[in-house]
Image 1 (cartoon, protein in one colour):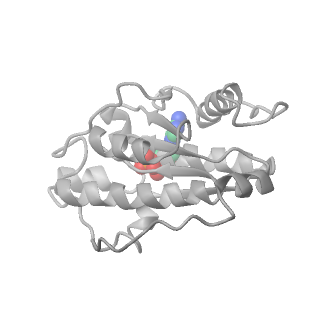
Image 2 (cartoon, rainbow, N blue to C red):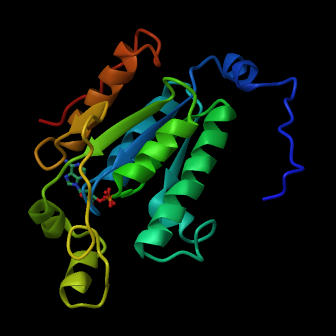
Length: 208
Ligand code: ADP
């Protein structure tokens, strides 16, 4: 890296952008096994938030691998670089004033910690989307577990690549047991209690 690069502070900063959007920016980071429900829950939460007038963006693991990270595979080193890049993008989005939702398997504790560390204080919420391997395997919406079992995908998280369970996530969702709406309510509750959302939000109606 060049030593001639100096950080330039601009007159419009995160505070100004947040003020304009009337919200507290942050990164809500969903981690968990493939098919645990990260994208589904993050998407449902984003829909509620935008419906209530918040400004959001959902960064999705599969989607960034089509562009920003399309040169990366699934070796430990590439997974690390994948999370480093999307962590930086999430930071920029929060800096732009957005409530940023990031749904990535992000299997390694050290990589998740690095993302937390580049965020300003209290702007990172780790959400553990916790579903047993057997539940994820049973769902298998993209047929990836079936492929991994046939040996067509190598280094698949939970099978022949490790997943390091979060030790102190801000939110722990038992996504193998609770319906999506309940998971969303758990998140809305947390965001409300921590002062990110203003009073008066509507909980999602639970399906009978
Ligand atoms: P991930 O992003 O973690 O890989 P996805 O959200 O893409 O997982 O897929 C999870 C699948 O499980 C979806 O097809 C979703 O509809 C289904 N599903 C069933 N029950 C739940 C639940 N309680 N929470 C989240 N997803 C669920």
